[in-house]
Image (tube, rainbow, N blue to C red; front, side):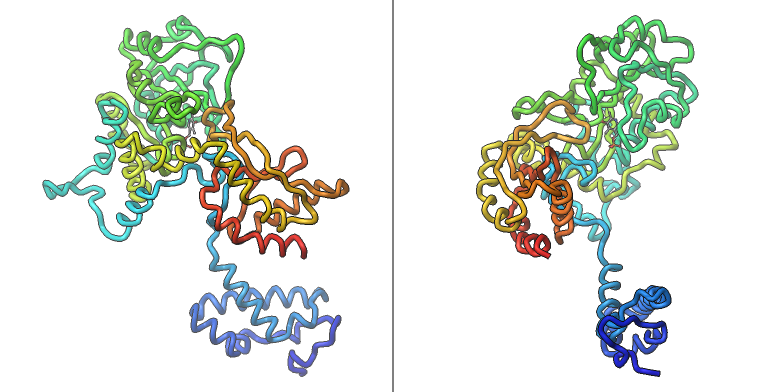
Length: 481
Ligand SMILES: *Cc1c(COP(=O)(O)O)cnc(C)c1O
């Protein structure tokens, strides 16, 4: 039999016989180095998979002789192992212009939240331990006082996310009974979170009242019966009904409910903890307002406008929160210590409202002046132009971004960025897709958006441009090849 490295003739095909055995591959110098670094299990597993794949192609007659050269097989094995060990969750650069991007991980954590998270995870902590008494503690108590201070609620509890908060609230307060919701508020949030389905999953019966565009107090009043357990409002966070519309506000609804001894729950979705108009942003209802209007329970997300980790926050009256807390489903939906540590540190930032727009990344990005973003675009223009020339022209443009995550769906954020357009009209669509793919394939994937035959890079969320600039040479390379 010929040794594998002797069988090489350019353009010729390899046969299964040209492949080394696993043993032989692992005994080579490169194989031994890989085993020394990663251990036998991973290297042998990948070697087997690599040889199987090569053998299949050899049998099919599609394996080039050059690919069975020892150096080629060693390199392929190292690449395979590298790919296997590479994380699937990657940092990316969000240049989409959408600040709270659900597909890109929603809110960014503040430095203090990251530090607290890391410090708390590095060793044991008092997650459910009362240090003062030396007895058992409650993980809710880590954030309850912060939440009641910030929202004015009597009590608070937290779960895994807001979908869980809504599910748990309905189940605890209305299982086996009826919940009245306006037809204008039967939202679908995405990811199969639809109000009617959540209601069913919670074991409650949905009673729809009013119409898509108009619901009146008497609609709720007429629907209330013996089996009614809860009146519910859902903030229509990802759409707006405009024109001839009418909805019953929380104060009126609370009046109707309380007169009959029933509670009112509001799902705010995003739920900003501060008045966003004070920062020049569109109005978003706050849990404080909902509670002041008489709502018994308000639920909202931790990783939307609040700017913290994934979490479902439930604030309300002592009685309602106590029922929610002791409902068995709570245990299954409870928050893990990781996000809880980040949530605590995030909420603490709200105790210093004057510093919030600096300390909380979500608010910092949302309030970043368009002029500053434009200045950054001007500054990056030439370097990016050089990387994409001659196939693409570049222009600094004004853009309209979004808050994102269903918050404030119709409002736009004046922003700025770079627009890249193919120089050749022919094949422009394909060129744009190729550019977008090249940007995504960078070590730190750059995610932009394609609109009106251009690739747009909105720079609102690019606070530190150096990692972006550092990749321009690689981008240039990949567009040339
Ligand atoms: C986003 C949203 C939810 C779901 O919150 P998650 O934290 O993503 O689980 C529920 N209701 C409304 C109105 C929302 O906007």
